[in-house]
Length: 424
Length: 193
Image 1: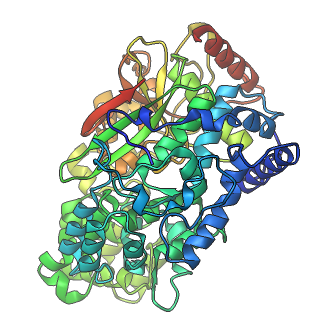
Image 2: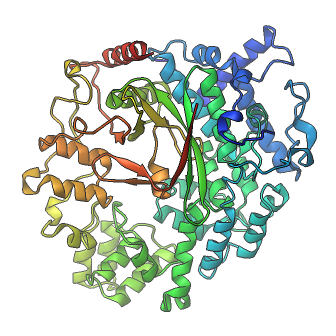
Image 3: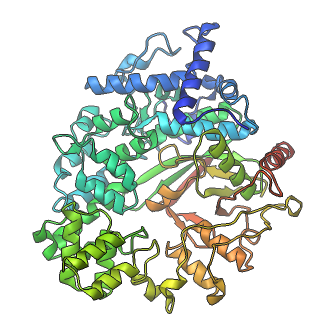
């Protein structure tokens, strides 16, 4: 078995400890910093960056680098000639523009300031002066699957009096406090920085509010129109606000009922409508029996509604469960890509529809790629084996190995090691 | 500060990260997994988790400077990770994407000299599960021209593990074809050594 790390935190601690040992055993100041340095610098750099509104040089650690250039300040860092690829991140300006479009619906995004920030790329003073991420933005991020519901809940708890998270707060949450993962911190900072697509999605909801007729007047951060444009049920357990809009779009629930339900979401009374809450809405007379029935039919992770138009006569009972059960075993003798053993989603009669339906489901994003491939393989359709690997692109789903199965993890690793050695 | 004119490889500095291989091996000494897996997954994790996104504009920080700073945009983080990969003996390349409207991104890919992408995926999955307690999803790869190995997406900004293309897909940098294949939506160029 592997080591005893229970978490990445333990891993980091151990790396830092390893570094300390190396340091004690003769690392002098001219040696390059180690991974432990990398990790230990995180908190320090974040702390300094948050306590000083300075630009580069604030994280200078004299004597720790051989170059000694860190304290030079930004002036010395400018390139005489912009490199050919140096403008890779200049897309910030696009983010600013997109937020301008969406500002009507999501007022916390200050398009003017952001535009200013985008024009001063690299200027930390401007970056630190930017507005933060509001609760509405978090909601929009969840609905865009940019962050998870639990991540949003964690972030909401730290919104503070100003009701929005600044880049400084996000830095601290991901660094010294360890409230959020470094990766989430990265994603949020990148979203806040703009121009990378995320904020486009967030602001798209705002754009819907201002252009969707009644949406703006209702004060909703999104509208049915915006959801229509973005399309697609949520694929979550329960009913999300986007599901409501899709159901209304499909004519399965009346518009006024959709507005009522959306208001529930926006007011924060509900995040996801589960079966009990739907029952309660019916009991309170908020929704009719017909609406209740439609909502209950769509509480599973796979929605009907708009999917019907994609998949014809597929009914709710045909929908694919989220979990794929059973274990996969690998027949090493068959070489690459081929797999044996029982594979497939439990209880799904795949004889009801053909491979083309599965491919279509995957293309529509209803099925994860791995799920689709698993089902196709169960249907006897060669997927991985028929794929051209040379110069092609693909992704591999997970395979569950049992310690006592036909191929153990040890055997798998050994085979991988042999392949590595053979090809090197 | 680096002047990157023709390739990000002019910005990498693997010679500054000679400690990487031994440190990682020390950390994961009891592991059954090959050095390749430890390096590919461990270094990506360190870059992804320990550094923060910060728009640094046109400049590209020297990787050792980035190590001290721990803040940078996609190209700063990519150059840092690539430098450490190279120091660990892994091959890397850079993928530049330029989407209409000015949205641009760069990310490194790490080479795995094993042609069986499913096997590579399974080993990575087991490494993350057993060594770092994380359950990972699908592993995205690009086959090399010779068919002898695969390039694994190792984006320090968007990938939560080596091979993670989910956020790249969500952001529209990648399109899938429903049969396991995918394409960069607006690929500008690939920088290889």
